[in-house]
Structures are given as structure tokens and as C-alpha cells.
Amino acid sequence: MSLLLDERALRAVLARPRLARVLDALSAPTEETRLVGGAVRDALLGRPVADIDLATTLLPEAVVARARDAGLKPVPTGIAHGTVTVVVEGEPFEVTTLREDVETDGRRAVVRFGRDFSHDAARRDFTVNALSVTPDGRVHDTVGGLADLAEGRVRFIGEARQRIREDYLRTLRFFRFHARYGAGAPDPEGLAAAIEARDGLAQLSRERVRGELLKLLVAPGAPAVTTILSQTGLLQRLIGGIGDLGRLARLAAAEAQADPVRRLAALAVRSGADAERLREGLRLSNAEHARLSAYAGAEAALHGAPAPLAPADVRRLVAEHGAGAVSDAALVLTGEPRPVLTPDAADALARFAAGAEPVPVLPVTGAALVAAGAPPGRGLGQGLAAARRAWLAEGCPTDAAAKARLRALALASALAAAGGTPEDSGRSPLPKS
Image 1 (cartoon, rainbow, N blue to C red):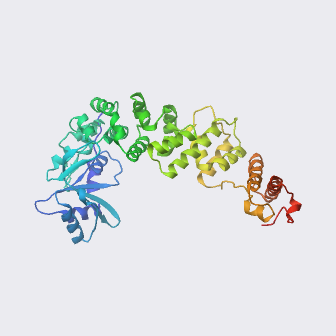
Image 2 (tube, rainbow, N blue to C red):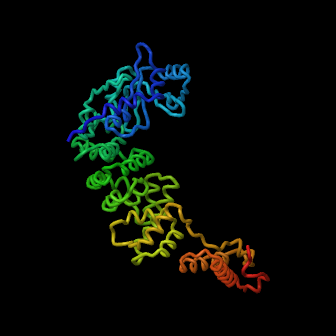
Image 3 (cartoon, helix red, strand yellow):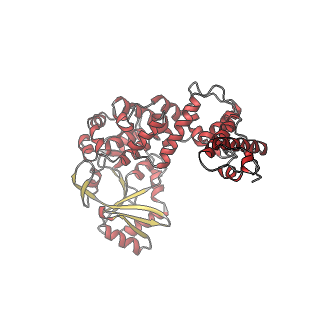
């Protein structure tokens, strides 16, 4: 079923005052600048347009000079490759001189500057990404991108195998773009070429693979496309294991807003070892790895918890694993036999996740125990561990009576481990501070 492309939305983008200032600055006799790529594609589909890219016949040095003369701020972000970022009132616009490929090796291309928009379009990956539009609103399509966009087809420009050999990341981009823009089954030629080129993924940096995979996982068609990746053996190469396709699909149906790390957790994490494997295999950031590790602990606790969970159980869980990890795990486990939360427990978890209720913290510190006479060392740690076990068993109370009781327990345990008693310390076991 064909989509009606939204030319009014495209004209609205062209009418944006900041974009108009850039186009005016780059306007010159015998030169041409067009809006290209994703901004054209998304505007025609009626989707939000954030980043705007421009292609021009002007050389980078001329772009810098003309932008500066117009009172705009040119930033040479990739000037050796023809890209200048022109900043207008804080909004960046990437302006790239037309290019033609000279040589490619599957990871990078040697290019030269050109003046032919059709040649520039032909070097792009997919037909839907090769559209351009002039400032007067005329759409230029030399590769059949408009028809593919309307039909929900993601199709390589030219011969699919050759396009992938130019940059093996296009294997993943093919699946990611189909998950975002495709309808029905993937393009057969593209799919066959992607499967054939699977060994080329090993040539890519893990950071690039990570970026494409996380973008794919939040696309509307992620569950269906991930199933295809699994069936073709590509998913195992990406995550180093077998993906849980059912969990990913249930999460996609349950969550209000797609979250890439949570979706990766649903697909690929059942233990801390999985989080470690993904950290190395995808070069995850420290924050991403920490989140997956916390999720693994929370998932195991929730999955093995007796039913139903009460608010006190939720309180213990968030104290141990963090509100975000417990909330992620509960959402991922939607539709599975466990966990079962009472309505009050679900409300409590929602409050913790939203920050409306603070996560409880053990009301005993090592400094307080030392002040009460506990010697530093292993005994101090044992005292705190004993207090924490009791605190968790009691449902993580933080009132004054619980604080006094837990401090006394911790001090006694610490001194016993060190071979002393509270009286030996010469201080009160319950200091006021």
C-alpha cells in the first residue's frame, strides 16, 4: 500500500528562518546548494526533522568564507572531507561539498570533490537517502527513491553487493533502515547481499557496530527485523549469543518509549556474564555496561521472586539493585509468569522509578561505627554486612528506632569480629551523630 508523500511538510522545512539564512549565504551564480538525505526523506514522510544536511557545489573554503561574510559561524568539522558545520543562532547545519568515490576498501572511501548532484546521489547507500531538494522546493530523484519511499522499500542504489563492499557497515544499515522505514519483507537482493557479506562485519570497529545495533533496536520494526537477523545467523555475530526474541517483542509492545539499552538487555542479557560479553563485543560505555549489570541482578531477583510481591519487597529490591534496574527488569518481564506485583507494589515501583520516593539507604555508616569505637578493618565490613542483612529482612526501615537498633547490631558484630565488646571501646555503642 503506497504512502502519500507530504510535500507541504517539506516546504515547511525549507521555510525555517535559520535554514533560509544558510541557503541565502551560500547562494551564488553558477553554484548550487540543496537540502539532502534524511531531512528530505523524513519531511516527505511527515516525520519530525531535526538534523538538516546540505550538499553544495561550493568548495569548503568558499563555504567558510560566505558563511562568515553573512554573519554566520562556520566550523570546519570535517573540512578535509568537504564538510563545514554552519551554526545559526545555536542550530548546526552540515554543509558538504559534492563528492565522487575514487577508491573504497570496505571500511573507508577515497573521494574527490565534484559538481554533479546525480554523481553524489549515486554514491549514497539507499535510494530513499539519495533525494535532494532545491531552495524553491523542487525534489530531485535520480535513483527511484520517491517510489521506494512511498512503497516502504529500502533498496540499495545500484548493485547491492558492490555497495556493501564499499562499506560493510551498510549490512547493518540495511536492516536498521528497513526496521525504520520498510514495509513487509526486506528487499530480496539487499537481504541476499547482506547475508553473503556477513564476514565483513569483522572488519568494522565495535563502536560502529554498537551504534547501528542500538539504533536498530529502537526502530518500529525492530522485533521483526531482529528475528530476520537471528534466522540468518547475523544476530549471533552481533551479540555473541542467542537473542531472546520473545522478550524483545513483548518489551516493544509494553514500553511507552523505546529505550535502546533496555531493549538490548531484553534481547541479550540473562546474567552478569552477558553484560560483560556485550561490553567487550560492542564497546559499550561505562554507563551502559553498569546499567546492564544492574539489570542482570534485578532480572534474576524478580524472575526468582515468590508471588506476589508486596511494597516491602519492592523496597528491598530497589535498595539492592536500584530503582532504574528494577523498573527495567519488571518491564522486560511483562507477560512472563514472574514477577507478580500487587497493585500497591506496582505503584511503589512507579514512585521509585519516577523519583517521587527516594530509594532507601542503609542508615548505618562505617564512619559512625568507627566513632562508636569499632576498629577499622575487616570487622568493620562484617558489622556493616550484618546490619545490611537485618535491614533488608526488615524491609529497609529508616526511622530513628531502626537506625539505633541497626547501629547497635553493626557495632556488636564489628567488635566481635575484631575480638572485643562495646565496653572495650570505652564509648557508647549508640552515638548521636
